[in-house]
Length: 87
Image (cartoon, rainbow, N blue to C red):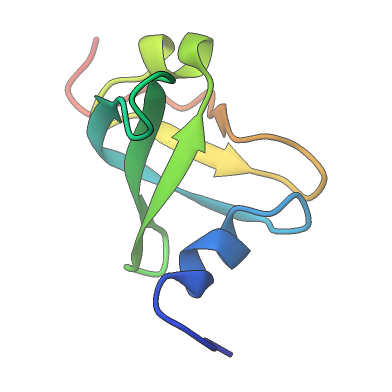
């Protein structure tokens, strides 16, 4: 149901969606010249990768390899599972 380039990613980050995956990249940028946007590249459990915009607190809390989940009606959050290689 992709009507134009990039719309699938926007659809995946709506409040109605549910997904889970692993953080594979963190980035931040001043896309409009005044606001700092924090994004994560997340590899979903089905193998697809998507970009997710997150708030500052969550961005600072997460590291590459952490699990992230998004439940219907909620914002993305870190899963309680331990990241690979951390003891």
